[in-house]
Length: 568
Image 1 (tube, rainbow, N blue to C red):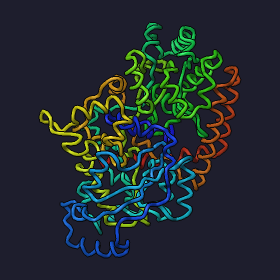
Image 2: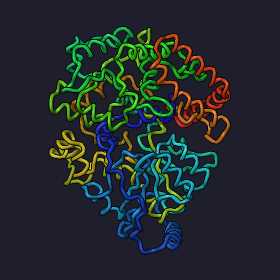
Image 3: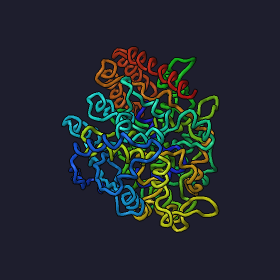
Image 4: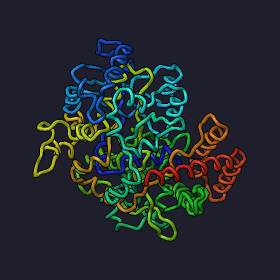
């Protein structure tokens, strides 16, 4: 399973994130917002600010938040978010307005209107970047910016301007993200260290689910879909009994969208449900060559031959899938639960029986339990500060604030008396606020902007102290994943840099997989499947797969050693 796909599934592995993602993960044309850098509202020049800051930090108190002293002076930062679906502008809601008033910091979000990689690569090529950048830690752009010296070491900024950073930053996360040059350039969100697993592990959930439409599933007698026979039969019965949904054809099975490098659902998701290990006796195990996995891919091939795979699933992108989910047109889905939480809430409000619920999905022949991706130390995204930042001191101070307990509490609960209060001895949302959160996430975001509407530095472990109890329909899916969620941190960041020989070969092999995967499902027989499969394996073997694997093994062993050190 690729690092990008695994992290996307584990980045929101806690209860809070399933609600946060309702709007954050939605797609909209509204995200085609202005991408020109906004002018700073600070009167002083960057150079002057930095000179002043150097003088001030001589007496800086590492135990006091630096941002408090500068809160009276306004500054506006440009913040690039490398996710085209993020469509929230800063401000106009209770939380953002409160934080800007409190810290003096305003934000202009810059979001790509189309392909994220194209936008990011264009900016990198120009050598000019916005003040802050948030992107998946697994993105090649992170390495490019670090190697190109386009981003600043956070530890050096903290040493010079805001030593309070070291008081609030997690040493384990800093250790994990320390580069060979001894510097840390990015700080993660939704990150969980080995120590966090010891402290919070029983509460951790996964985003990876196999779901069915409750009313249809129960009408079929709640069949066992964990075996190939039961899986195919349930899809067949669903199509026969419910051929149409409100006048439109039923889609028996939904999957994540197909991309140029594959499909989340048919790779890491399926492999995790099958409980296929990622290592055996300290050696990385190639799960793609596992007989159980290949056997289940043939089950999906058979499903297509039986007319149970709609052509829609091969071409639909997320917006089209969200529309069809909102119509209840899928019978079953091997899908990330947070990606359709908004639609599922709407279905639940119309008819509690017409929602999607998690059930046991594909399983291996030994009926071993699924091993789903829980939160990892890499987190989901990293936030970096560019060399072009207009005010280094204010930038590192604001970053320190955001990752601190105070900043996380503000980002989640908002302003006391407005969105939350101390009720029954616990700091929690006011009744009318939680009511809107549970009923209409989009309206909640626009009005209140809390519950990590702005998720860039969210700490999903810290948040457990404030998170409201889960409610249906999200609760059922979250509870289903408990006990099945594990850390897969040691398997993060194994791939070689894309400019290296191994990296170039790996990228080519990934694209070949993206081409062959749909062909495997569309093949007319198992024999044709085998022919395609054997050619794919032979081609990747000829294209330096052994060197790729050797590189990954070395990185894996380094990760294991690093995690052991961090856990001492």
